[in-house]
Amino acid sequence: MYTVKEWMKISEKLGGLSIGQSDSRGFNRIMLAGAQEIDIDSIGRILLPEFQREYAGIESKNKVVFAGVHSRVEIWDETRWKEYTSKILKQADQLAEKLGEIGAI
Image 1 (tube, one colour):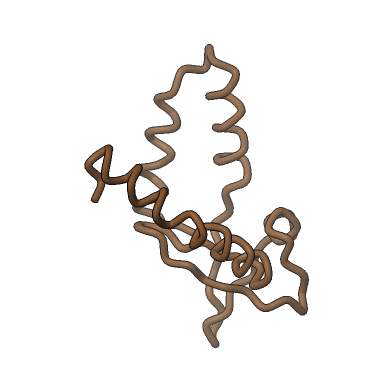
Image 2 (cartoon, one colour):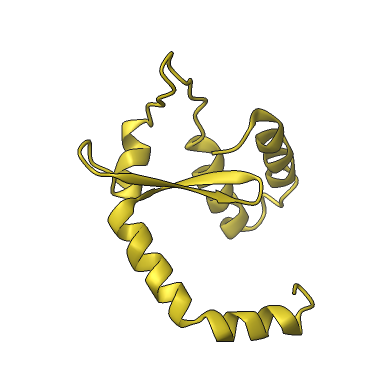
């Protein structure tokens, strides 16, 4: 999830990609065609479109995780999130070295 302001920045950048490259066209289709504006109801809930729930593997009875990542919030099925973070934590030293090499940390 992005704020409208952040989404506008992203869509402008995507719009500037070459339509002559199939990977750019494909990425634009996935990112832009699947975008939905969602509302928050009176008690703070959001309803994700069915195709986005299916993509994320979220079923109606599943618990979810809201992960703040820079300027967005990612919504994960809780089980998939635990599997992902377990995998990444095992690679933490290698990832830190790579980020150090490019000056990110």
